[in-house]
Image (cartoon, rainbow, N blue to C red; front, top):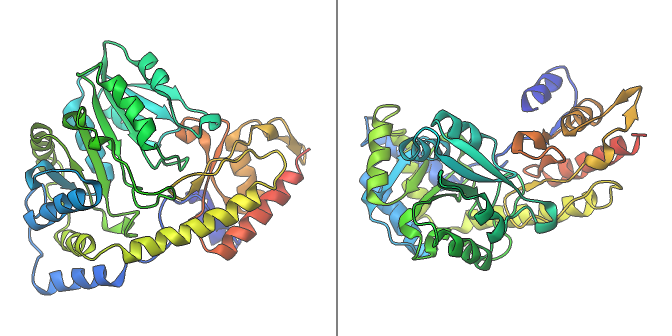
Length: 379
């Protein structure tokens, strides 16, 4: 959808792109300054595979300071984006045929990464009625003798759902019965959270030694293009990830790593300013989307997405063309309203579309006006 939107824009069409999964803010200046300083000080050589020691120590300090989690720096592997950290974890943990339980909707790459690691994805379909979160009973029903891992994100892409401490505690009670199951916890949207402090499933002592925590800098610090993420895990897992990464990419960019040190040591002022801006935008978009007849929308607790159900428009037509699924709706909105969204089918839910509100307030208001007008024309 992003590609199609760019192609339309290149033809002179005014496309409002709400398909991107990245903040629309610039990286804070003090982080960019640290990168310039790193170059001037000639940090331009190969780095240790797992990252510079000062960065890994800064990550360990962050996990203790912000999450009350104790990790040694040698339990942390810095990668070229959180995406590589996820792939590392799956590649070192899965054997052919191992099952990975994934709640849906899920980020598009989860199942493909499992496939690359020769595992099998087992999906639990979460619904809007439960704010797209699964229950302990649903988790336990999905477990089989082949289950090796549970993989999820909170806050979630694409739904913005956030698991509370109580909801995570209920899931932990299930994991306590199955000591051979590992938990891959994607916490990249940690700081874009509108319901209070972030809760990591690694905070529960009974499962901490089975948790592989994934995080990074792209969302909180608007550093998507810098490509830096990390995993924190039991030592044998971090050692294996280090060994794997050493044969693929080795260490991530030296300049980026020094910028990462500055980000972690620079406080959360800019991070909270961006979060507050997203919170304001969420209110604007929720108010406007809720007024569109036929669109079912819930209020997300984090990230910067809405995931409305558009199934009431399936089977409706315009100009002789019938729209039969979420992909048809997304394409219709792009070509008619000139608003780029993403079909929910990509995220494991064929009834919904994903709308990013990582855009200016004026763009968001205009996009919602266009969406409302286009959907009203369907008969």
